[in-house]
Image (cartoon, rainbow over all chains, first blue to last red; front, side):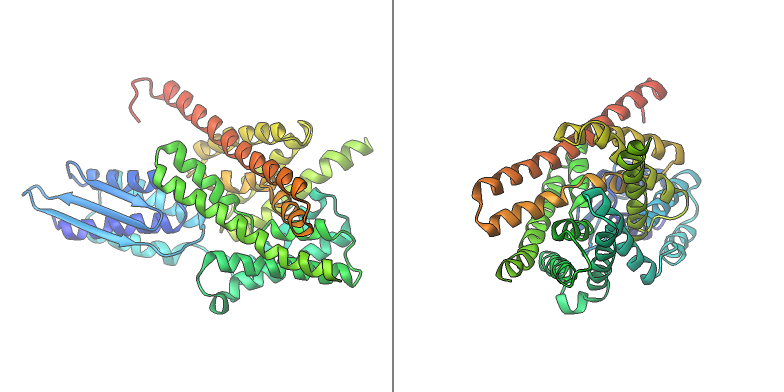
Length: 253
Length: 150
């Protein structure tokens, strides 16, 4: 068997899983099971949120290691489910490596993605319906919808302007959120500035990072858990700093 | 009847639709979309019924932990998606904002007060959801795999 190829496939699978937002234990467990299904005795897998290292020893006693770095990534549940399915299937069926490779390559292309317009719509309707939960009326919902669309637009199309720094990006988006809400309330469309701003900020809050951090810690991956927890605290700080811009301006006028 | 509609049904409907918006952002399709949104509505309903305190958030997060584990088992999918979206209505976005607004206004006492409340909320969410999820997993393993193998 071509162990180099097997290693490449398993690292690739780990990378796909990680970049779709899987927990560390799922990545490690999936890659380990895949390698064991192909007959390796004790594969070693180590993963942290932006790196996967897989090391195997061939039956002849020759060790091979591969490391793969993973850049910044979002959450893609559909891809995660498909990766999980593929891994389960590979472990049970154990197809030839070429077939496994082509199945893995087909994964990204065949996973359905929402169009940018649909995602933008999602960014719009989430704040619009959060606003009644915080005590807003219909006018506030409309304001939140507009604010959410503005933030979604910044997140989707502004990455070239804002760079890839997550902290900075969140701060800018949060400033946009508070400024748009301030403007809309100022021209008389919205009634309650706080409600509108909070609803719009809900699309930025680090709920995902917080939940993931706790899941990692509960699963025993302390390093990854702490790094994700730090991520969520930094994101919250960025939101606070960004919204301070709007608040400070509203105090001046 | 009117109060039930206004105080409970309408907010839950809003939570449902807001979570449906987030499923678009996280690329969740088909049946998963409905389950996540239902989870969000359930989360908000329990939070309201239990009195909108930190403890209510804990209870609600605990319920969501079990709900998402069950749904993940039924659909044979990773649990992450359901948990992420269903917990979103409880994430203390308001706390962050109010804390900052007191900070900008120079009201240190209320700033610290709100900040601690926000942290409490976040901790309640995390601990509630994770504890029941771990508990559920332990019981499930015990019931279906009594020999301790996975």
